[in-house]
Length: 199
Image (cartoon, rainbow, N blue to C red):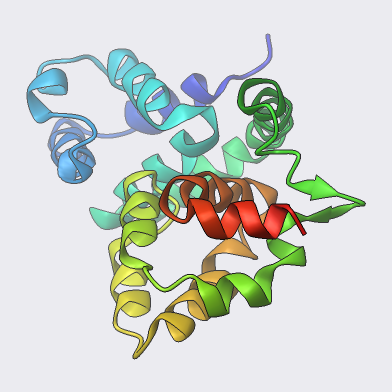
């Protein structure tokens, strides 16, 4: 049977001792997308399913790995990412096609073989002036960690913030990160997005 994202997350949790598992659950709740009371007494398969349902198949592996690293379990995080490489490739294709169906166009971000973010990178860097809400949502969805959040937030102006965000997070993250950025910008910078898409 093909391995699923839930299987990969469960395998990572199943290797944790009782103390590490408790620390993992507490750290997982830092983003407040999952409340500790919801998982305090939950078994590992239930927590794995909760992570996937909360952070989606596309974000569950990276979120789990981030939490493992945050509590000092780097080897476990590396093992999870290695195990999840094949699964996440399949999930990426599944999510990408699902996005096109569900959002009716946000993932038609790719046109003529080039993504919307690639085509409009310079405009986005120069015209998006309110970066904090974008960082908040990327942090919440697990695309960036607290250290990266602080690094970008502390840049001296919005152009530098957007440039660092693009070069260190969005471009290395591929189409999934670019689609997530577009989703946030559609909400936070609606008029800029409408203008750029209308060009």
